[in-house]
Image 1 (cartoon, rainbow, N blue to C red):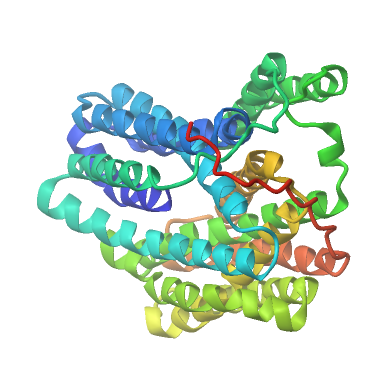
Image 2: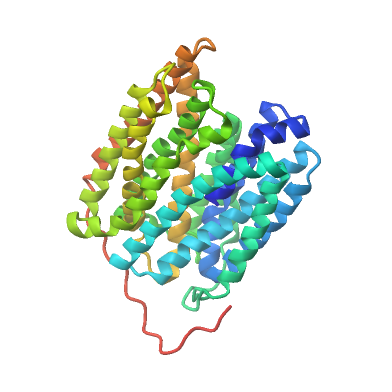
Length: 443
């Protein structure tokens, strides 16, 4: 999913040239994906608990592949935006179910810490590969080839998924909260639309639907999100910290790529590859995070990660120069950020999911991913507004000042998270699942 987003972002200028789309239309090629992805993560996670994790994962892959075919064949901007919206829906189902499968396969403890570290490393590697492949494919075969890459990747993952367990849901209570599903999906989708489209009316409508969802969950016998789950202190705090982490990290990736291209004059491919050192540090650091948690403890490792995230972002902001080079401005701070990223993401995911029972892994996945996704969208909206307000004229000096102010805003989010992380207590372990003497039937 990370690679898909990176590939498409690199291809956007070529898409606009081929389809005659302006910047406003191109923004919706990206935004349509974000809206459906953010709106369906929670439903996808809970659906995986009820229908089977592998089943929802493969269904999401199938929808992603079909939507990618439609995107590769699109002849108008409207058709491409619709395909991207369907891609976001498929990616939400697949991502929520995949994370839930990881939680199911690796119970809380050192094994899960290592698995989440590997998961974070793959995310960093996916961003690098997506940027590189997007540039190469667009240059050699055209932007449509980036959509066909998704089809091939989904087919391979679908075949590999057949080896995964179904994600036993026999103990999940029967029944489905249809009203809750409709209100939360509509509410989250409208809030996402309001953030990326700057539409206050959509935001108000989304807030009303989410309020209706909260009331519905207290009155239904089989709630989509049991209120008792949301009362867990570790889940609430870790979910908020994960959102704050993304409010710093996601805009930082965007701003660095934009700075390298618009101020330093690098090509889209070169600008994207400017994040390669950071991603390589992520890949190297993530597998070690579990060992660090065992030595320092979960809370201290998390606080260390947020301190490094804040320090790296401040360093990056102060290092930017209108006429600098990648080596003198971005390189060194990005290495610190590469070390911070897996520390904050692995620890917040560990804390948020530690109390989840096997029947709640999909729900926990949906809650964690939804918080992080909306943190990304909200953070980007805030820092772009800050950058725009500080950029008065279209000069390298003005643009650099805007990027610096935006990055310092992101650093403030990381500083707040570092202060809040010291409040994290040790999450209560999830109840042990009943012993099964035979393998569940595949679904």
